[in-house]
Amino acid sequence: MTRPPGASPARSVPPKPRSRPEGRVGWLRYLALFREDIFASQPARLYRARMAEFRTPFFRSFLVNEPELVRLVLNERPDDFPKSERVGEGLRPLLGNSVFVTNGETWKRQRRIIDPAFEGGRLRETYPAMLAAAEAARDRLGRAAAAGPVEIEEQASFAAADVIFRTLFSVPITDEVAARVFHAFRAHQRAQPLLNLGAFFRLPRWVPRFRGRRARRTAREIRALITAMTRARMDEIARGAAPDDLATKIMTTADPETGERFDTAEMVDQVAIFFLAGHETSASALAWALYLLATHPEAQARVLDEVRAVAGTGLPEFGDLARLAFTRNVFREALRLYPPVPMMVREATRPERFRDRDVPVGSQIVIAPFFLHRHERHWDNPDAFDPDRFETEAGRRSARLAYLPFSAGPRVCTGAGFAMIEGVLMLAALVGAFHFAPAEDRPPRPVAHLTVRALGGIRLVVTPRN
Image 1 (cartoon, helix red, strand yellow):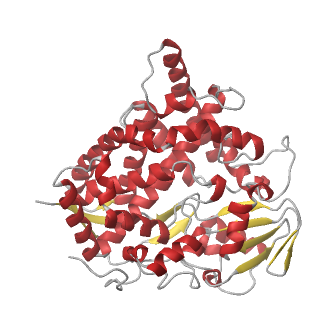
Image 2 (cartoon, one colour):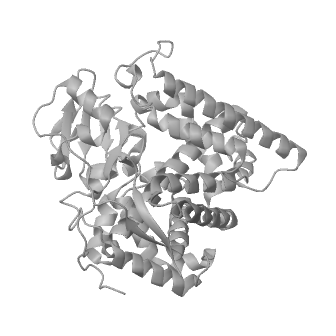
Image 3 (spheres, rainbow, N blue to C red):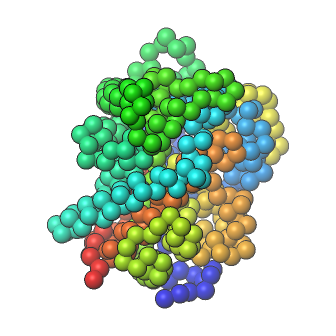
């Protein structure tokens, strides 16, 4: 059942997003393509380019694929390249002043409070809640499979949301409020909240952004539900009756420099991004990983062999995860081919010079994992599904240079370790219980809005194993 590290995969190349035709595109046409799909608005040459410049009537944008420039922006001088306010404009109605959109001292204070909850020892403590979510996902998928082909993105979304609510608030997705938050988030994603006037013009706070009615309504609904959960937890903490979960840990942690804690409003902002980042991104990665295994049966068989050798027909314990090396590499390869967050946008705060080009103050610096992870200069056979590449010297070098599914530097995702544990556990639980195969000959089309999903979903035939 094994194949030598670095050997070529036997199956066809996984689906790749559409690119727009080369050549100049008018601004209105670009906006239309962007609204349809972020990828569809970008030319295919970005998979080869070291850097590209885009000029709009409102700002200049530089996409950087050169590892040295990526390192400069994210690792070496992050304070000179804060998160772009243009991206925050679209997400602020939902995320408020969460750690995802803030900069400077506000962001640093938030990270000092949040980071302790996701340290290694704490992840071991949350693992029983993840196990319960994995068991529930396995049962839910079994019921869905009995009715015919399964839309696996929907199942992955339920599973990821269940993990978030069990680890954060100690309630399952079947809890009424949790279920309402989950459905409201899915509606918000479809409302395309990134498109608004503030994303293009620098506007004072008092100027209306004319955000979509649906995006504003779903953001209000989500925040109202999260506020109720947060206030209830605040009351439990005050009474000494709160469960020892991530929400309690974060809400009772004081900033070591100021002694301050999050109040209810601040905690609502953070819970919103925990759910958006932890649910949407994990669901995307899990769905694509299962699709890749369905279309590469030899890799699926290797995952099954590994899981059975480690955990039998049960679920792996926390200490077993280190022995699931190939399963982990499958998840890493899914994150490479379909990084959940398609691009990160920073802003130049002082004049720069990148690759002999002037970068004016206010320019948008775009770092796109999707282009980096499939870049022809950085990876061997970049469009192929090959989990074993991470075991080769060439693959490890490429990963050091051009692999950042969770960003990098000081702003690396605080939940990166959490996400990797969740992904490996879910793959082990589901592949150990079911065989996956494509339900349709035509591959799904990846599209990007807030995260990378499949247009129309991913349908798989799911068969229980003996």
